[in-house]
Length: 127
Image 1 (cartoon, one colour):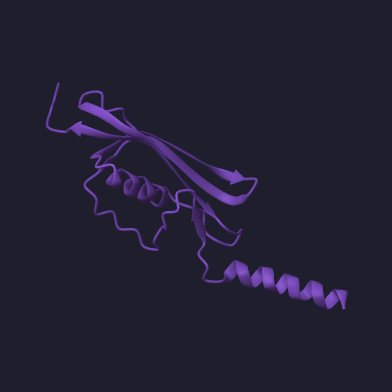
Image 2 (tube, helix red, strand yellow):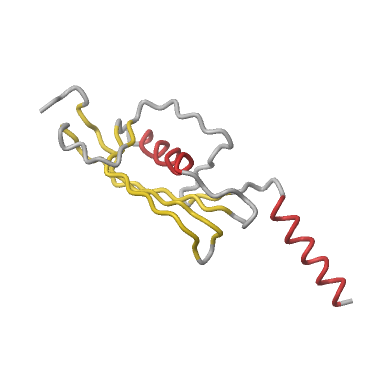
């Protein structure tokens, strides 16, 4: 009886791992689509854009984690997608000072985090 229960538990765990419940989770509640197409006019940069007149609206962050060992590692495009969605809600035209960090965590098989400043910048101004 115990062996049958153990077998059912293993089957349930494996079945959950490969089910269509999604391979990733994000800390923001924003779903990441399978095929990301960035049609946004928002600029993403790791630079500070000091040569532009910029006002920071809000510091934003994003995190994408893979749910099981069997899924592909999260990508920069996925975390950028979440940053862009947040910036759109703030009417920002630039996300600057972006910093990325990735690895394996205590509660995840792999993650990528990003943070940056959603900003309004004068892109026509050259100092």
